[in-house]
Length: 88
Image (tube, rainbow, N blue to C red):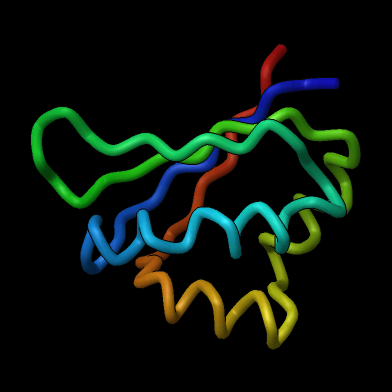
């Protein structure tokens, strides 16, 4: 199962961090072991790391978010672009 890192900016880091449980639920069809990371420099850059069991489905969801995922990303303050990096 490859590890994936997703990076993007957020409007408010503290607000974004509050949604861990919701992110776990939304990403559970694709991934497990989800962890949030914030930039050490205090910027609004964040990252998610996860073990992905369905990379194609995750990639599809990120490329064309469902209305529910799109609403969640807006609530979480996600600022595009969202970039996924896969372990090789």
